[in-house]
Length: 178
Image 1 (cartoon, helix red, strand yellow):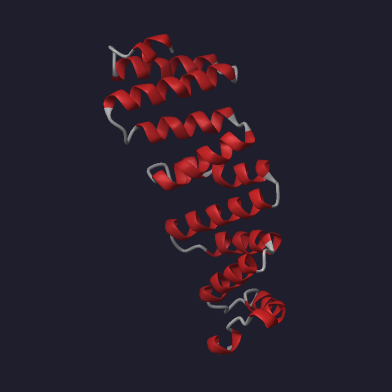
Image 2 (image 1 turned 45 degrees about the vertical axis):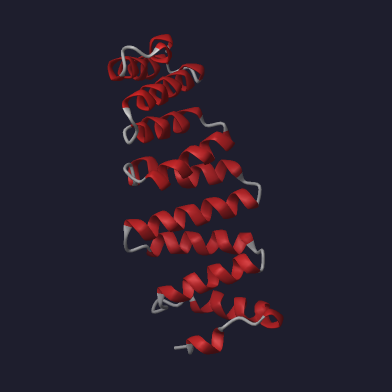
């Protein structure tokens, strides 16, 4: 095993440290901490292609939903930085089913969907986020999700969300308009 202190980064040796960490994290017995160190170093070096690669590795090794969420978010951020918004959206879209009650996950899915102009994912995130809101806000969010799906051509799902919005707050003009 490589002593942790010997692999600490020094600014003038970051390329060498990155190469060593990249090799260490591929070892089957590698401690997950090395992967975190490698990601942090790649970020500091502005090597977002390496951050994306390491985040995929982190996602495969994740042992808890929290670790998987962190890997998804890191991967999406790296891909956005590289200008690959559609792949960033793909990396967070699955969070709608993998972490449906996690506001951070849903917010990330919504942001990436908005950037990628993915109406269905955006509406799905809004619908799930609405469940944690007050009645009037929930109704408005469901109405917006309904409008989003309608604009995307999914009239059946749009109608179902519009009905949910009206049932949530029948006195809301926004709900009735949806």
